Image (cartoon, rainbow, N blue to C red):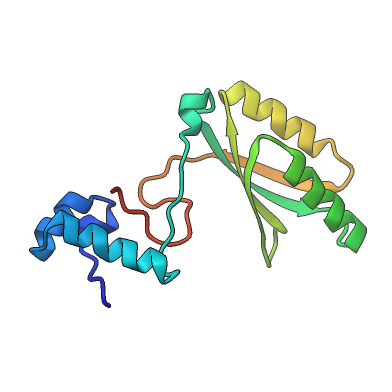
Length: 145
């Protein structure tokens, strides 16, 4: 089975994608169901952090003071426990981690930054507010059914 993806499918609009492909929506839904059964697609639930009172989205770049296994584990444990951290990615290069964080406002983000920078294991934390223009935080391609 082959599913052709149109620009509308990439944007997550299944109705427009079905129209672009000249196929009924029901057929496209069946194709997606088949892909799920084969393990090539999955259904996920998403939440909107802004609707939970966390509209202020930031990316943080972190450099640790030390790269001992204990320090790395301690920082990763901190990320796992911190409710402001929605995603943590280990990097190669001048920074060790990229964090996606969500906050109520600028003041809350700055307070969080100061708290994290005060940790002995953190050498540098650069925190910047971001606005997503295109894309998503999911692996794969989200489609609205």
